[in-house]
Length: 226
Ligand SMILES: O=P(O)(O)OC[C@H]1O[C@H](OP(=O)(O)OP(=O)(O)O)[C@H](O)[C@@H]1O
Ligand SMILES: O=c1cc[nH]c(=O)[nH]1
Ligand SMILES: [Mg+2]
Image (cartoon, rainbow, N blue to C red):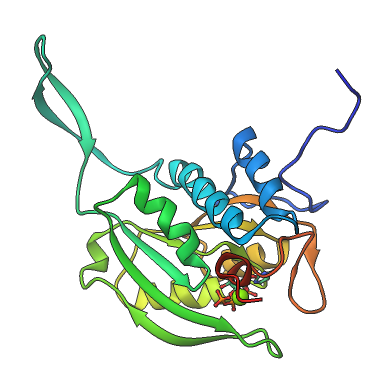
């Protein structure tokens, strides 16, 4: 045993975690997140780690899905067993970095429906600019899991969720890898009904709206564009 400080997924001090925010502190998640943050991690490694992390976060994001019972036959006897009830889940990727998380989620729930919301953050104003939306028609009848690796100012996530609600969605979970107190406050104030699943609450935003210590630009690291 060493006296090294225990690893903590909450790097922000003095921040009271809102009741609708879940910080996934599982050791595998924290280990993979550390590898993901490292500047030396290659594009291929970043993609693989993001996919693996998404699988683990999906476990938490889908925790409250409704179940119903069905009658089945095991090789030994009949039994009544639980299965997911209702319409198929809908994953919504906030482009483009959300696609890194989407891949992992689809590994776990291959039959899910998929929507896309294209947003980029204007580097000067830090306001989101919408450029593409394609969603399934019956959003009101589906649990919707919106994914984006980064929750920085929170404006992109808040705008994407606003768009989802306009399309009829009313059961929404937001999944990200990194968040900061500022972004969580903004998102919780705009959408207090949305459950947020994150692997870390980082220390702060810097003057350019980047998460610190963070991992850099998630889209650029996933797609090798910089
Ligand atoms: O919380 P915010 O301050 O709004 O910042 C977070 C947004 O910034 C990044 O996207 P970016 O604009 O870089 O687009 P990209 O995914 O195409 O790289 C990230 O993937 C989020 O969508
Ligand atoms: O740190 C940040 C902030 C927003 N978007 C990113 O990709 N990284
Ligand atoms: Mg980007």
